[in-house]
Length: 466
Image (tube, rainbow, N blue to C red; front, side):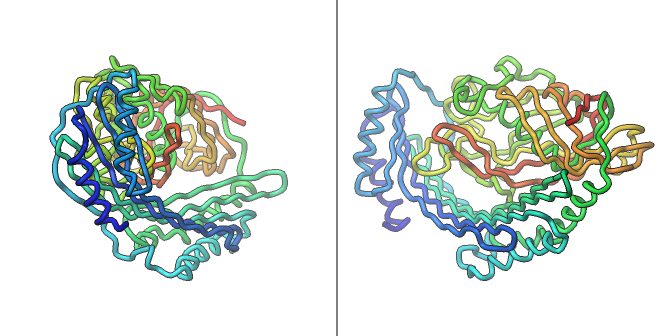
């Protein structure tokens, strides 16, 4: 059945829905291609398509069902209704204003119409940049996706979106004697293959490869103790995603992700309380054109917007779907997403980043008399409540007298979330983004996101070592 036939069928199904408090129907198509090159040789090529219809019905509880068979949509509606009536959880939804609207990403060079040979050439160019530097192990991944979604509900929503995405990832490992180091770079966006030219990954990979070899040859042991630490955008973006984005998801705050993705150290009464210095604001914004996490209407039909999670150091808002918004006596900010037709929409991030400041990165380093500059990381972890976190540097340097000095090996920043944000006294203007797939839920749902941030300076934090 074609997309237009599915849409027509969805409209008819919604009109026939039984008398319920709320009914929602989503037609969801995803198609993907994946190419993996290892050490210059094609390792994997795969393509897949997922197409189906999801139904949610609210009576006392919310019932969900889905089907990939258009002839069985009526049966799926009956199952969703049965599941709703069987639920012992009383669910309320926030009151929203809905629209009839559509949107799409801007695509100049359709990746699904481009030859396999041309795509392989993209990977070969990136791989050769590392191969020329004799890097021990090289893995290059190209992921292409297209997502089409139609949302209809009994509250008046009729929204559709089509987003094409491209992601190019590089994972490098270099071994010298008994020492090794790793680097990963992940660029992605909504659009076509024209995005790859903008990223100039061959040149970046060549530079990373040279640095990897140099650090193993010349790097000295990282210092330990209390000192000033400057982190680059590559690190601050991950920090924003893990220590603000996840713990500000309202379902986690309410304890509903505890058995799957973890809990949150944030509680509802912390809204409006101070978490960091006045220089720190953290934003989640799905409306950024060209971003990897781009969308304009969420999977409940709510028009989305820029969400300011932390504003000048103060907890400003949480990420909500309609159910959590109702429990917090507010309205949804369009944070409901699902990875496929057979998954329920849950509270998710999109493009989460620390907002840039007005300082030049060089100025920030000049303000440190003795400390380190962690430009990139090779390892990280954070606890289930998103409170204690640890980052191990890959490309990192000593700072002496306001200047970059010698390379150091594997510095370790161990810090709590409140301590991190309350230690920031300088924010750069150099906002950068990395593409990622954020996992959450059970069954697992991976959705495309950006992590982003600028150069930050932290005063007097603890540095460990491994």
